[in-house]
Image (tube, rainbow, N blue to C red; front, side):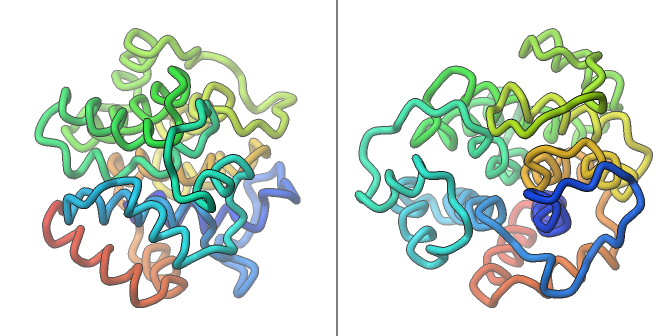
Amino acid sequence: MIGAIAGDIIGSRFEFENHRSRDFELFAGEASFFTDDTVLTIATARWLLDGENLTDVVIDTFKRYPNVSYGGSFAAWALRGGGEPYGSYGNGSAMRVSPVAYAARDEMDCLSLAEESAAVTHNHPEGIKGAQATAWATWMALQGHTGPSIKAGIEDRFGYDMQRDWFSGYDFDVTCQGTVPPALICALDATSYEDFIRSAVSIGGDTDTICAIGGAVAEALFGVPDEIASQALERLDDYMLGIVGRFKEKFG
């Protein structure tokens, strides 16, 4: 989970000022901050820890952090207290799903939990697929599978084009189908967590979310260096740190 959180924080300052280069400082003081990606990842972790109603957890978390640049449709849903999902295929389902891979008992449980985590808001098939692909790639990495084998599995199981050159002319895209594949490619082609981050930022686009999605997979493949993890964690408040700590103690 810390891989997604650190990715969000590192990518946050580049979301609307893309930096199409691998050369940058990972953290830049107060300019590096958590966004809705981290907040809703924390909500997913709490749901898995405590077994509460997921909609209630998401709404409560939204109320705790009301000003972190949520998507308009999500914010409207949360402000009316939840209710029916709104058919989204945005990348919000994928950026918050990473805790599922650690809590899942097996492969099918991973896919089921990922769908459940997405469907409260993102019940469009592409929204569910984006969450499942991200969780599945993370789960497979945790089982010891390699980047190339996971890439092949993503193509076979989810139908994403994992051979496309996303580094050429990539535009800002907040859909799962336009965000999940490049995020996963960056992670699965990387040689370390930091190598992933530098590739993901250099693509441009919705940088914090690309880094959060792929960051979960990169963590599972390589781990997050202590220096990066500590700088990310020091930007979280006590409530978030409490959930991160409890989650790590229970699920690893």
